[in-house]
Amino acid sequence: RQTHSRAMSAPLDPPFLWPLFSGNAPVEKLEDFINNINSVLESLYIEIKKGVTEDDGRPIYALVNLATTSVSKMASDFAENELDLFRKALELIIDSESGFASSTNILNLVDQLKGKKMRKKEAEQVLQKFVQNKWLIEKEGEFTLHGRAILEMEQYIREVYPDAVKVCNICHGLLIQGQSCETCGIRMHLPCVAKYFQSNAEPRCPHCNDYWPHEIPEVFDPEKEREAGVSKSNKRSSRSRQH
Image 1 (cartoon, helix red, strand yellow):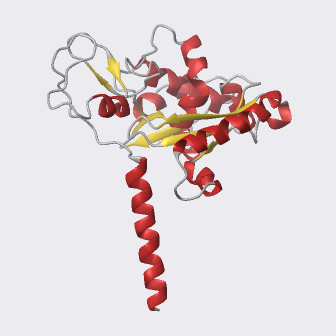
Image 2: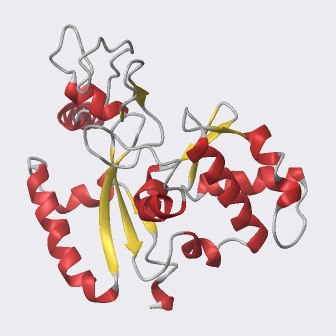
Image 3: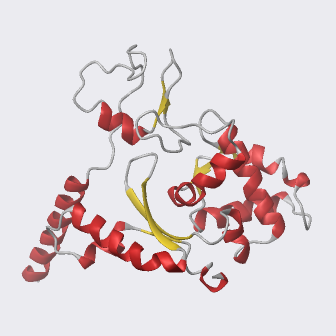
């Protein structure tokens, strides 16, 4: 099992999977295809998991090793003090109301790391490694979990931080960033907000029915994305014929 731990823990984007189908293949075909693969991978303790990005609802797929715990999967790529930095960043993110932790707050914990001492400059570089490996996302000096990390670490986060875990009222999945009702406090992923209120002129909280005060976000639409891709492809083909 250990030989699979490094190779079998990686993000897969839909474009990696879509070429296996004709341009008009429905999403259901992709789901069936993944289910068939997972039935074969089951004996290897490997699974293709599907999720969506929390900010815009784009689908994300990860090839996940189920035989190792979440943080230990990172052990082949990161040193002990680097893993401890990730744990501390994760805790700050989980405990925050916004789902983000500032780089300043993360770096202020460097002196508390286990293992070899780390300077703040080194810690900044390690944080960028987490971003490059799709464990974290950075936005304007703040960090949140990448969709890949949420997919792989949901069970770990629920077990380790049971009192701090936030759950979406619509899909009941782990919620890191989203919107909340100012009256009753329930939370919703941005893609779930967009879907739930898509035809509502006056959105109201699904729990307490009070007015929903937040802007309804625009999120990923797979049909529009495909149409845009076909349009770009046709334009490129047209230009190449002209030359």
